[in-house]
Length: 234
Length: 129
Image (cartoon, rainbow over all chains, first blue to last red; front, side, top):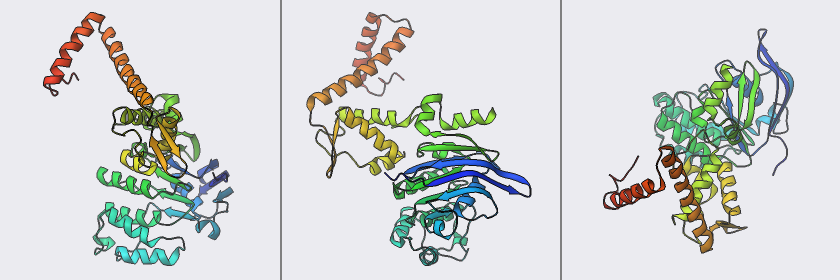
């Protein structure tokens, strides 16, 4: 077991024009688990993921990802899937694979091809010609095919149909490296309820609740979804 | 298997794996599917599967060999015990419901015999639920 924390955050504060998106947030996450990052819109999920990914500057606090402060060293070990599409519309899957292979030394091209086939994506179509669900699947194939220490997936299953959601979750499960940390954000807890080891509820830029999924179910005799609704309402 | 999100998943997996062994779906001495295969089949977290399989080991229903993997026990007594325990807990929940309906042991026995016969002749109509 690797005892080094995959993510260590102390007193992280990030404000946009004076409005705090994250306020004095503390967080410690061990590797080897899937963590659900949950919260309603505006709770700070995306901001937190962007800070961890090294995609945001201008924040206060101490942040360590895979042992490094966010920057080139951490980015080499972190696979970040943003919520917005980041690939050119003109790309076919082969073009995107080539792009990833050029940018990331830990990218496993073979694995990406296998995942794209697993998802049944068309090799001859451009992203422009693909459905939203297909584009999500392509981006997940690429993000999960890096041999990273930390995977940050921002709302990877929002806006896709239930059948696609299930197959995406299967793709994530079957390609998850058991020594890595996978942090997956969603506002639909039910969707990830059964695949997470632990959960982190954010509200107003602060950690509202954090715990091991089965321990929370045992303690509250409820699903994470029901628990989330309850603690949010209070 | 249908997972109930309001109860710890690992405990439900332990029940499911015990059932598979008791029912002979996983035969004595057979290799238990890998953690990853089970996680994918059931759509659950691999660590949760690992934890549940550890408990199945602890219950003496499987053994893990360092290199070869995990195997269902060949200890016939352990499997018989598991089957008996599973049957007992099913009967216990039946008793709880039956007594809650004000049934006596005689009522319950009579009902059980009648339903049992109906179940044998026509499993569809025998479905009490």
